[in-house]
Length: 124
Image (cartoon, rainbow, N blue to C red; front, side):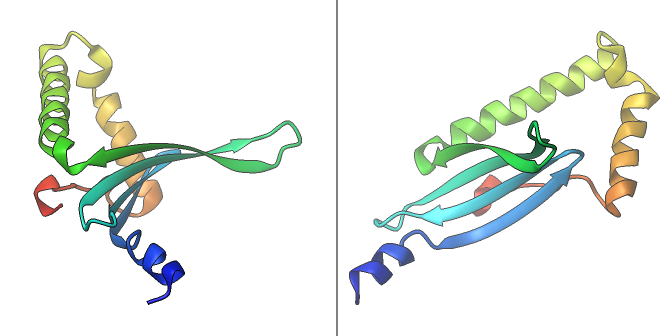
């Protein structure tokens, strides 16, 4: 096999999912290393405009490696649970109000569907 092809194959995307969320798009890409280890990249992309009015995409990327999947998932779940508790407590009225839910519904209807998708880290 040619070296270029071999180099190309180990970076093949195993799975890719994009999630539109308001003014942002999130990309979840599962890739493999040369050693066939899987890793996840999470990319946030936002449309921005420069001084001349031309648009460009500002991107932020997070690399998550297999040895960190469980800890990341645990931390993410804990953060979501904390948000849920704060919403229920009324400590943050914007989370509890119907306006918060209306904004989510508005985003969904603008996109013609759900504004998010579940990611199951067990599938990685």
